[in-house]
Length: 115
Image (cartoon, rainbow, N blue to C red):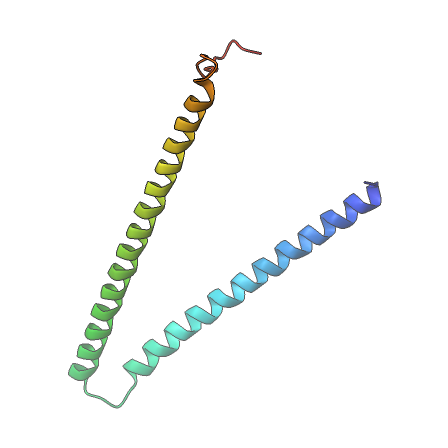
């Protein structure tokens, strides 16, 4: 790779990072604006204060319930993936032992002294 290629690659990576950052900022701004607009719309809607407070309370409860559901789903997914990884690691260890068994050798353990 020539110096010119390296400089071009570096420039492209910087531009890509800048575009990602801009996209994230736009998404964040849009989300914040939507939340503020929704809140203001609810607060200034032609309803009584009691009805508005009940609506806000219900919306908050619904959001909390949805968040709990998503957290539970994420936990289940994490547990499933962790179990699969452990099973694959266990199978890998068994395969290593089987490969070493016919020759009568045990798998070598690495120590900090081997170089």
